[in-house]
Image 1 (cartoon, rainbow, N blue to C red):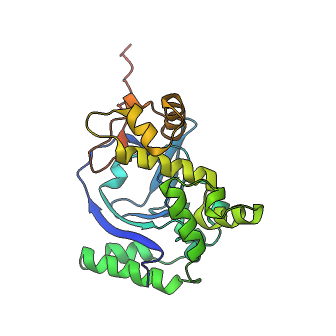
Image 2 (image 1 turned 135 degrees about the vertical axis):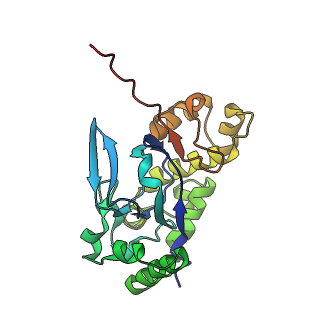
Length: 252
């Protein structure tokens, strides 16, 4: 029932130290539950912004700085492009990186129920049941096909998004305009393509950038980093880049 909407549901535990990292945009919306601590936060403009421990995260077209400690024990629902819309309504109307899920669904006590679950498998079943009970609309096959084609590198006009109404419908369901979504997915293809030798110039051509300068400018805009400064947390976590600790002031 959930497969057309949800790419994955997982329960994760990691021994990560306190710190910050940049997350790279993926084009996907998520529900994130922090089972370890009742908060989710992000940093911008020199400030730390905090929400409750269960939140909906709309797709972003920019890097997001988050606290690593909030990933010690989590449940994450990753939606397919457009897959969150039947559960939360117009995604492009949500203009913050993290929205308290209670603001969208009302008080569900879902986080507390997940903490009390007998096992990770039981917790994941609870998530599936909650989502199944909130499914309001069938999948939009035309939009899913358009998003898949954009993800492969086709132009916006070539996938049938030709009118303002088409663009608005896409943004409402996916959370990004077609052009921004295509840029984010091109970045993801780049990160998929580049190998241990880090031949960025060759990878840039393969995924559809005009030239290396175009790739560097786009990379910086979407990640806040240059390609040479990009060092993911691990090979399997390429969308997480650990930030260096801020230097301590010398004692006076």
